[in-house]
Length: 165
Image 1 (cartoon, rainbow, N blue to C red):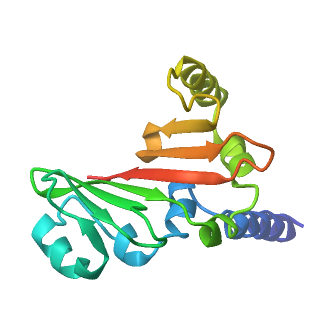
Image 2: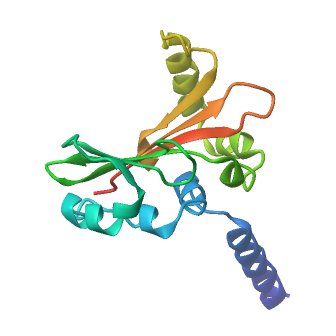
């Protein structure tokens, strides 16, 4: 009986772990191309300019490279600090958004009540012509900011991933 109980408990643990999709950051990263996800604070601007030369729209800003990555506009920005990768901004294209239906609800379900309260307060405090159009979720624990459309679907609009360092 004891062995059966242990076996059942272990099975439930493995099933739970197997069904877990990973952290919010890992879920976002799974949508993006590897060459963007694999950027680290060790990534040097000059190397990235060579590697991504065909996609660069603008590179005269010493703090950023602007890329035409998915769409016909500047939809990816790579930010630098002291010529090293600092952050990645991605305006999510429709074909990637469609892979993560109900992502807003998934993210909310993974946040603590303290995080949810802070996000709500931050969104109320936004003072711009775009306030109300979007819902921003600053998740410093994951070194990321998510922005969702504030409509019925609440689709992911953009992501900022900071260097993990």
